[in-house]
Each structure stands twice: as structure tokens, then as C-alpha cells.
Image 1 (tube, helix red, strand yellow):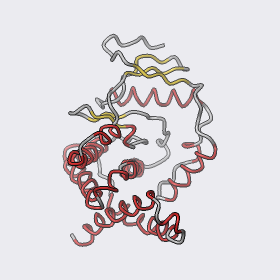
Image 2 (cartoon, rainbow, N blue to C red; image 1 turned 120 degrees about the vertical axis):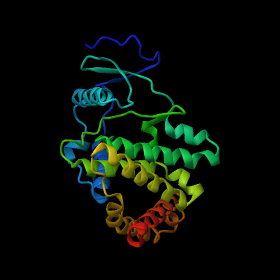
Image 3 (tube, helix red, strand yellow; image 1 turned 60 degrees about the horizontal axis):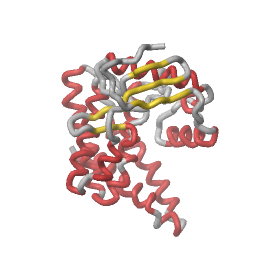
Image 4 (tube, helix red, strand yellow; image 1 turned 90 degrees about the vertical axis):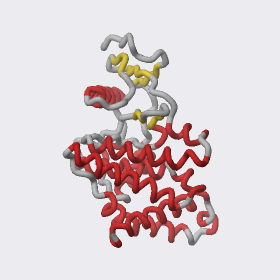
Length: 257
């Protein structure tokens, strides 16, 4: 068992190998969604059956990321059955929920740019939703590293999956601000990625090309859902269409530029 870090935060979180794991139905849903958007996640990467192995994997990722200088929860103790980590602050989702409307878009763009810089350092998250990011007013940090996507998938593919996770988790806020906010968030990622890659040496994933191939599939979902009056007027579908319009504007920049 690793000794506790005496300088670690007072507030801690504990994960154990006994906690409920992802059901087969949820695993299938994640697997199907990933393949639908062009990320061929192996079944073994989404199907959780061994709590101890899952915990050990997250422990190793946290240690490796911390050693690389990334902002992640500090590991205070790990005995193979329990993983104790320090608290790293308020989630981005909560920050956005409580922020003024005028503060949201700059914060969303900052999170997107920070993800691009993280990727440019050769890293990937695997769970880049707003609930797994924190913001302390100066820095973003990341938590929840259970997804076993590497080895098995190319780094660029996993990084593109990160971008999709972040963008779709922001959809509730795009609903108010519209497609222009989606475009701004995607542009923030691309601008930061180009700037950071120049100093890091890591190749940037081609987000525009990826979305260019993905958009027709997502548009098909929107058209099929329109056949149902209940689905066509749903909040979820309205949010999806807002995201798609913003993605389309982002891709259009590639063809017109």
C-alpha cells in the first residue's frame, strides 16, 4: 500500500473494487455509439467485469499523468482494492451551471483550448465530459480515467473522441447560445492545437476531416427522429441539431478556406 501524501488535500475520494460496474446493456450502448461516430472501441475496453483490474488501471494512469506534470487527483493510497485520491475542486459542469450567461462561452472555449493543449502534449482523457473536468478559476484539471482505450486505438482517434465527449456534454449550454457557440468552442480547440503542436512536436488530430465524415451520420439520426412528433420536439433533439449546425459551420471553414 502506498503511504499517504502528507501535503495532499484534506478532502478525499475513495473508489473500491466492490462498486457497481457498468452493466452489459450500458456497455453495449457505449460500444454502439463509439462505433457509430467512427471510433472503433474494442468491446473489452467498454465491458467492465473486473473491478480490481479497473482500479489498478486508473491508478497507473493517475500516476503516469502526475509524473508527466498533468493536473489530476493526487493518489493518496492504493492497496489493490481501494483507491484514495485528493479532491481537485469544482466540476466544470457545476461552474457553468452557476455562471452568468455572459461568462459561459469564454469558459467553454477555455476548456476546449485546454483540452487541445493536453492533447498536444501527447495525452488523452477517455472521459472528457464536463463532469470529469474541474476549474479553480485559473486551471483546469481532469479526473476519472477508467476507460481502457489504449493500447488498442490510435492516439489521434482517442483524442477526437475526447473532443466529441466535451462538445456533447456542453450541449445543454449550446441550446441557449446557439450554433455560433459550438463553432467558437471548436475553433478554440483548433487554434490552441495548432499553437501547441508547434512547440510540442505531437501531430494534431484532424478535427475538421473527422467531423466532415461524421456529420452525415448524425444528420441521418436527426432526419429519422423527425418522423416522430414526440422526438422531433424533444429538448435532446433540439440540442443535437444545434451542435450539428455548429459542427457544419466549422467544417465549412475547411472547404472555404
